[in-house]
Image (cartoon, rainbow, N blue to C red; front, side):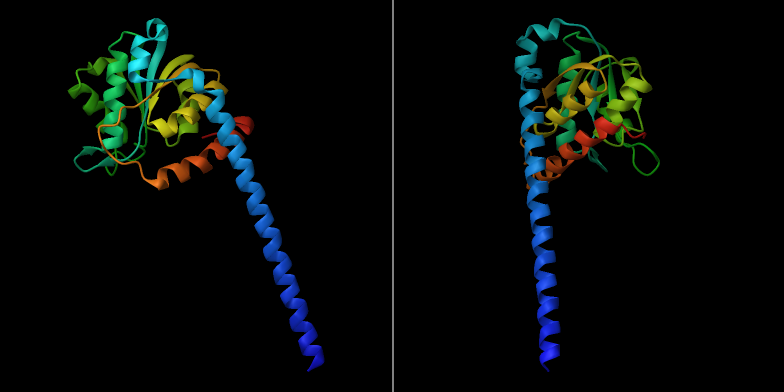
Length: 219
């Protein structure tokens, strides 16, 4: 009986120590991500504009290779409200004459089942953008891959990056890490609610892209 109690006690101690180790690793991981998030946001502040600020700023008179608009959810009826606002903003940015064309980048790996870039291009045409001024990247499956492909596949060296506010700092950071001279423009918000999930996902994604842009795995 005493031996059994000793064994049970040892098992409990091992479990406690294991839990404590994982807890400490979790705390360290969150702190690490927090530092990355703070640095990524603060270091890119001067390169991020609202649409109004961009239109009034001298940077809108600079010339860029492209306006890059990053994709997100497409519904059966067309772009989700978040994506629609990104596209409206990109159209307004392009109409300032600051770039040669708009690059829409998203998931069109299997366009018969899901076609982000096709829906994005159609929306831009409805916003008054000529079809000839729109280029699609159907394999922009992530922010990291979109910026890598912007350089490797489309030879972009300068860009205005348009995406939702919580996403713009990472997008500009990734573009800079691939050598793109870029500024970011936060998409307008026509009234949709950004869910806590989006912020949590972005918090983790900044840490992921921090590592990816250093080791630069392929796509």
